[in-house]
Length: 274
Image (tube, rainbow, N blue to C red):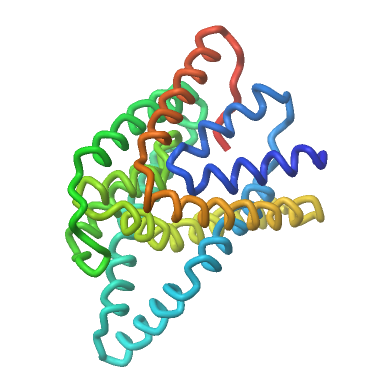
């Protein structure tokens, strides 16, 4: 890969993976605007691992506490962090089941060849993000999380498997609709995403190994750059949500969807979603 392609992929993955603006929508624009070939499955694995490590590093205290809480549960002692760890596991189950189901029926292979779905999802879920953020109450914190809201947010995360929805976007949308404060909604969305991102990375790594693909230096460099970009993105977002609504992100999503639709209906070819 060209060094420019490495930098662009790292920027796109590191920024759009965590901002509620749809990473798949931006990935569609890359080949359309640059003419670059697909970067390959191993590169996808590496950038996802970079994103995963960024979340773990930023929320390292929460990760340590969740791990300790999980160990306490195995020892028969229930703590607040152990309960939260269980809720995150519960919230991850829908995405696992839905992902397996869609893969079995071949839906994902089909939808990835239909960029118009990505465009419309960017618009529809952008509007939904605004409405839930604008009219959702702000009275609940993560300490108020119970099994029902955790499961609802988990189901929302499962829907994000469909390209264009945005995992971080729809989980924050669901949390805001349930009355969680904006910073708490973002925090839970990120923690819930840790097993999801790790699982996706492991699955893609398995596919890469099965295909006999190797890891090259450019791939490692892309992952390292993605890590730093993602870490910066999370830091900025967590500060922004304390003072700014999700309206700018909703507007951007709608604009992105309209751009994609414009390109599609003008006849410009857009590649499959990676």
